[in-house]
Image (cartoon, rainbow, N blue to C red; front, side, top):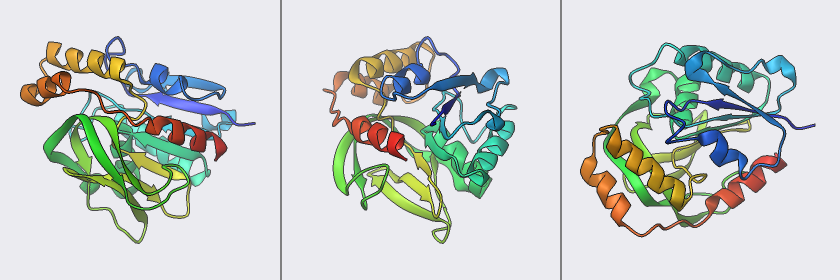
Length: 226
């Protein structure tokens, strides 16, 4: 029986609630664990799938709770769990598997509705194509060893929008397909209220019409089938 663990990396769940966003699309028994409070899943409890969520934290300023989570991601990979890291989780999976030189501050944040190109057909991401999806990130993954990792998607300002660890069911995904237009607006306003940098980009994103191609439907369907 499939069983999902969600590592919730959010700092302010009243603004950004990744567990609520993801489970709206995943009909699978699950438990969620607040990493910032020191809670992580016990992989002996029969989990088959793991989601590592986004966060308002920065991967380049490693918080005390991050390294224990990175160790758990390594263990999940060794046990052949299906692993999906989203946004901050995408960066954390890269940190866990490729080390600190695989993450950095992005030259330009991506905030709002962006175009992503899926470079090749993939069992999780779906067929090669261009689509629109919500994004909110200041850090990025880079410098992956392409003998170990397959780069699956890119955008104008982020060359590693998605990757897969070769030979494993392990993915990182920079964008937020799980965030719909209503939730995106709530998150962006929360970022303004908390003084996030990139105010102009945040306001531009709020003023722009949402462009959501519902990539989450493909990803959630494929994730459940793995």
